[in-house]
Picture 1 (spheres, rainbow, N blue to C red):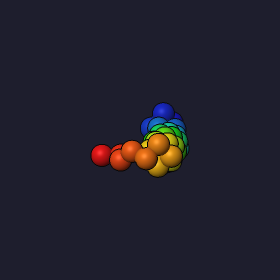
Picture 2 (picture 1 turned 30 degrees about the horizontal axis):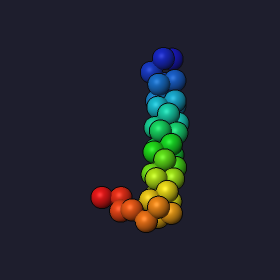
Picture 3 (picture 1 turned 60 degrees about the vertical axis):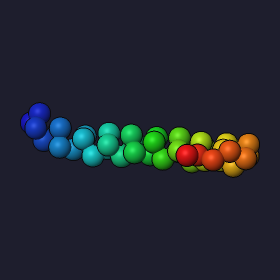
Picture 4 (picture 1 turned 135 degrees about the vertical axis):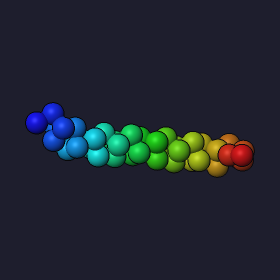
Length: 40
């Protein structure tokens, strides 16, 4: 049972973390464009 729950929950946790990283990166890119700075 625990192994089944692990396999069901793990993709959801991974997707949430990926979404959080993408949103944060998008906000950083927008802020850099507004201030005229390069991301690199």
